[in-house]
Length: 465
Image 1 (tube, rainbow, N blue to C red):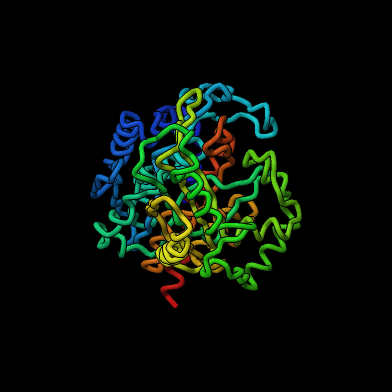
Image 2: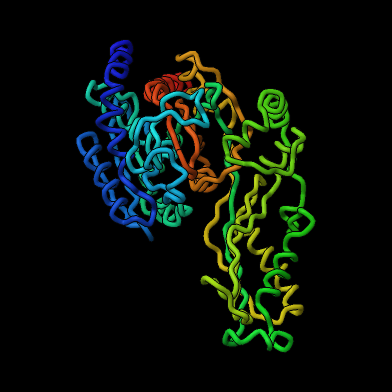
């Protein structure tokens, strides 16, 4: 039967790309585009209605989140997380093909990749979503789905999944039935190796505002009234200076495990820093020494100011003293610590700075969740590795990802193992010319099939002992 399924996946690949993937990629489902979000949502619901026992729609703060129950040939459940929203398209003139057309082109900057579909969501993360669903449909049609599944479709991921914690609470009875959590993705590097990262950093996103009761008065009064911009700079410098976060909970150096050290040793000899920078679109960097690069990238807490606003922001200029300033900060961390503990320390720290300020200030928590880790010997990792081996594709393992994920919540609160992984060569997430390599799509689909089958067999073996 396995040969029949593999043949079916191979035989239908071009049809899948033409009739399912490309139409889905042409839907402009960036998070704040309500028409595109609704169109993508309807596409997914239509796609899964014949295979779902139950579809639950949860209205989030911004967009809906869907939970679908799909029965397989086992009472064992695996939780599958997917996202249908994307980043908006900026600088469309930089694209070599209109991102809404999902055309097949060769990217001149990556000629070695060959023909690619260029579209927003091609990599992150609409291609793996529809490819995984396609495999589930094929297996259901042949009565060969080895596991039962709960499928989550998140429409707010690109804004930090603000509704995800409440969604989880509302659906705990379903979530608790699941053994593990898997996020289907396209994770081969340009050399063709399948990349697995054994966890995600935690994140705390916050806004600091400084303000006065004044109007925005003429700058001739600057010497006799408070300036919230100056006070915001003082607060930032009080939190972060000389490349260090001044919070005790994050000031301690992250202690690497023996496994971390070994994985880093392999990575730094195998992976070119230049290749990482090229794929990310980095032109200027501050670290070139491999040991320091990988430690800072993966384990040192980040303190990133993503937005800084003050005063007159329209075209031209206006000589006035601002009455309000704000900045958005995200702190990413590998440490095993709750984001609210970081926030508490931050409040205490800034209260000490209060006597030095002339303006009022407030701190707003936007979102946050802790870091997550999964063992190299876990069922999820071993099943993915075996599925790659079935297609003669080697695995490259990283100790952790520098990114953060809302699915960390499931690891933090319920101890559920969670991993992102899968075959397929793709790149330029959030950037111009986001792509998926056409020739790698069939391996992505085959990989999802082998993973589900292998996971079921390995789990049965574990439970039989």
